[in-house]
Length: 240
Image (cartoon, rainbow, N blue to C red; front, side, top):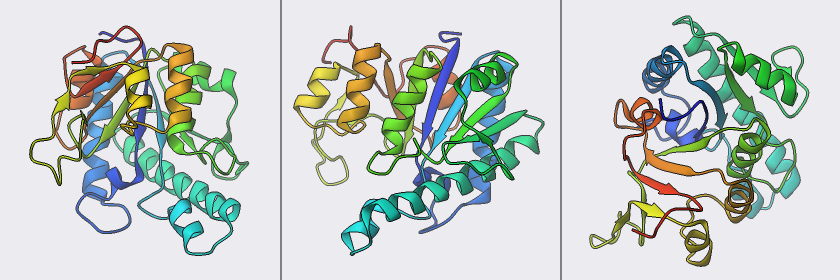
């Protein structure tokens, strides 16, 4: 394997498949099967999951809701996704722990860095819910923060596109996909791989980011094996 410890960033939208809202059980089941392959390979896997399929704080704030309140509601949505993913994994005998940045002791452990690392070392998948526990921060930033805290080798950002483009491929047929990028190029060109705070955290801690299409079956395990899939962002990368 190319990596020892991986943090997988999943958007909430990735869990809803072709539905317009909510969670598609078939998508979650397929994702769980892929994660099982990763665990069987001996890689330690942590997951940060978003909540945009259920509630998006920024959108609610734009509609007049208090931003901090909206973000807290969004954090609760991420815990719903985390618990759903946990159930799918445990149905196929993958040991998991959900840790939340907001105390919810009846349903999940509180986030404790040393405990999370111990779970990973014992082969459990750790799913981080409730973002960072603070409003005004995205789950992208949470992914970068948790990756640094648990000493992850890489962040996998699984999306609905097959990498990072110089323009929106949905509206521009001439958009070019990058194979590799530097942190600086991502920030200066506002390529929105992750938000600026997340990119800065990854740059400071030298954590590479690999962006790939989650809908292609097997992409997660291929990425862990070091195959060139999607786009890699890193300090030693060239713009290509």
